[in-house]
Image (cartoon, rainbow, N blue to C red; front, side, top):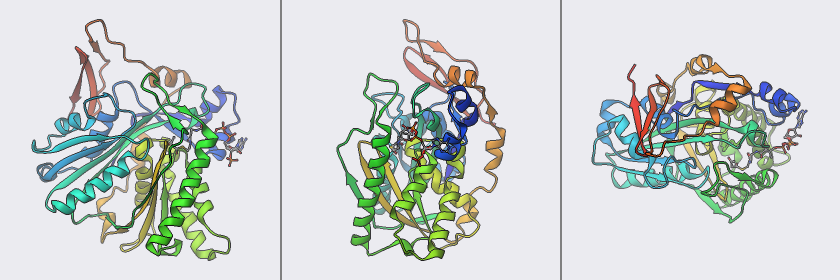
Length: 382
Ligand code: CAA
């Protein structure tokens, strides 16, 4: 399990001041504190490669025969971002590399495909990446929920961290709550309608999940949610906790919910990655979870497709997670609102031959230039 975030962030209070909003609306109303900001040289490819680089060994690279990237902010309408990542990471050549799209749900579909692939090919590994840069535009109602980052996971027969259970329940609803037509750089969103749909999809899918699997909240130590903004995870949990539930169970679920939103409060929405960011935050920060504990997960992609599934913590899972993630947050550079507006919304404008050279970015992976409309990436081993 790896995570990559860009090296810049915006403090949400600075945004509130600039937009003439009460800062409490963002920090208390949405539970958002900071937002990750990606420069033009960081995209879903560079962030995805960085997240996977965090844990991949040379042995893993020989065993991976499938790379799946879930994203809704792809860099090309035709070529999959995972083909670039395959090359940047030096994965063995006889691999399948694809990109999956269904708003913030894509990576969850990828997880299930990966699981089925491993069932048929027990000795192979699948690299699953959830990578997105969430931009709503300056002055929009979604602006305070933007973010950028990537989660990467290695899916294999004997997992080190989470063992997936076979209890998935999905739901599809043809709705227009959030979408981005090909001609638009930013999504259209019906904000309040989208949160209503998210909660309704959660409640109805949870009902079906309980029926089909004969499981209930008491069977889980924690519930992780897709986090378009952290407060929605809290609202999600509250919406499925019945009146009269055991007080200790409710407290435990609430405490773990708060642990699961620590990272997203400082990063913002990373669309397909945000559920997995919540899971990582829970696993890296919890001091009470132990092997054998069950965790439920709710994935939601606008449009809409959602899924509830669960996993069981593996023996010694903590040994495979970082305990110093805060260092990455502390290293980030804080931007002024003016710098953020310039950086986050910089457009790539190639000349008439399709060429553009970018300012040097000395991150591990970066977009160096575009040459005859081809993206050229740089690997800068440290
Ligand atoms: N102090 C404390 N709280 C305050 C406050 C203050 N001074 N002022 C307002 N608030 C609270 C409000 O009461 C509200 O909380 P509740 O919902 O609990 O009542 C909260 O702050 C937000 O206030 P508004 O609803 O007035 O905010 P808004 O209308 O400007 O925007 C939003 C909210 C619609 C969620 C907007 O951020 C948005 O459009 N976000 C993008 C869409 C989104 O994230 N949708 C989620 C579901 S879709 C999905 O999940 C896919 C995806 O990733 C996009």
